[in-house]
Amino acid sequence: MYRIFILFCVSFCFLSCVNSNPSNVHDEIDKSAIIDSAMVVSAHPLASEIGKSILKKGGNAIDAAIAVQFALAVVHPSAGNIGGGGFMVIRLNKGDCYTLDFREKAPSTAHRDMYLNDDGTIVKRLSLDGSLAVGVPGTVDGMCKAHQKFGSLSWGELIQPSIELAQNGFPLTQLEADGLNYFVNSKLKFNSIEPSFIVKDNWLKGDSIYLHDLANTLYLIKAKRRAGFYEGEIALKITQEMERSSGVITSEDLQNYESIWREPLIGYYKNYKIISMGPPSSGGACLLQMLKMLEPFDLNQMGLHSYKSIHCIAEAEKRAFADRSKYMGDPDFIDVPLTQLLDSMYLKHRMSNYSSIMATLSDSIFPGNFNFKESDQTTHYSIVDTYGNAVSVTTTLNSSYGSGVVVGSAGFLLNNEMDDFSSKPGQPNLYGLIGGEANSIQPNKRMLSSMTPTILEKNGQLFMVVGTPGGSTIITGVLQTILNVIEYDLSIQDAVSIGRFHHQWRPDEIKIESNKFDSLVIQQLKQMGHSFKSVNSMNRVDAIVISEGLLEGGADPRGDDSCSGF
Ligand code: GLY
Image (cartoon, rainbow, N blue to C red; front, top):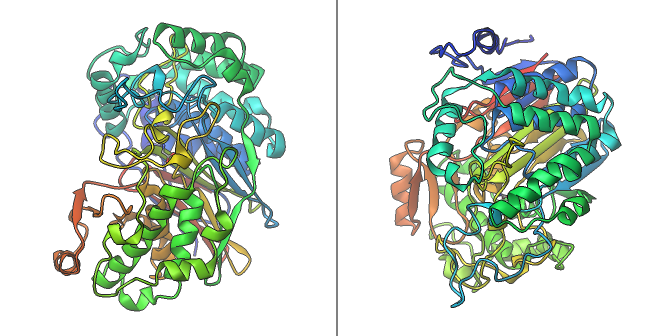
């Protein structure tokens, strides 16, 4: 039986009564859907709806992904972007796979010690706040490359809905209103020219926001494609912004930016094929390592969220993150030993000091250092079209609202992705984490990522499209969502909604969502030697499972995430 959940009626209602500050904007967002043709799951109902409209017109999943990417830049400015970067994983209906790297790059004048004082100490927040934190954006080039290779609708058709949204305004959800208030209080000070969309200092749910500068920027991208961003008016506005606010991105950096089609990273877990993103993301490699380390264990028999399964998964997570710290970085600059890291004998050996009754101290897992501080504002969308093509995209500005810099009179935020490099290899960063040489800063190098857009096949058929924001917790969030479905037979909505935990080797603690786990289980894990840090929420997973000809969407209840399909 087909169950169809109708979404967005509330959103549409309030699109027609802007400025009215209604109390129930998007309250009725339905998180799950089971349909039989095509689906988009993204971080915002308006973006999901635009993606669906593209699919309904006969567009394919790549067309819809491009439209959703531009829509998120409008309606979800904390992470959706044209001033950032990301990764796209594609599986066409015949099974061919492609991965696109549109990750940001270090500017050509960037150098290893650019965030250090004369005495060699790290300048607090220099890699996070303001123009010096910005990597050369990759999103627009990435969308152009994806469209060139796979687009079926016209480029203009994919951007036009976002131009209209930015121009005509749209009502804010509670989360977006809170986010913008955070932006004004914490990030506005990094701007050399106050963005024109700042009309008041306290947005409320239901207020409308108008992004005229951004609409103009999107119009230029629509008219001139790549050149509308990396050359001409917008490129000039970016370099002028850099000059005003001590950034170092030049017009040559912009002109020279290229996204790259890379070999998909492929691995196996039981009878599932995992297609994910390779370096410069660590996400796919760590995910495959964790799954292979876990394969010999009977997680199902241990039980969902039991102390035995949490312990076992956390131990595999620690070991993968330890490897990440030493071996992973931009493959155009360093040799990432992927063959060895993914070798099944090697991964079996990695678990040879695993104890089922005691936590292995992180110190005794690897004598190296942990090397990445990452924040958790990124966004993910999963799409399946009517033809059976699937796309999984994770994209980011790095932390919430990125560097905080809105390009003067161009209306879009710039990333602070430079902080994903190791500012000082071998030394603890602001958060007590230690950086690795493989991820040190070099001109034009891509900073290591944890983004893990992933597609699964079961018995040769498309089975799951999955991904999430969440910095380093991205990898473990994707891992647990996959295991929740494969090992514990949860529906995709339950798999997405249920509590998550995360171990990243350093610090030696399990990050856990508060009030989502049995206190007795936590007690047992503490007795085994695990330490805990509670957080309010982790990740916003957006996923689709394909089973018996139906598409089942799971949108994370932790955000405004929504499913839309037909
Ligand atoms: N900025 C988060 C990541 O790329 O992992």
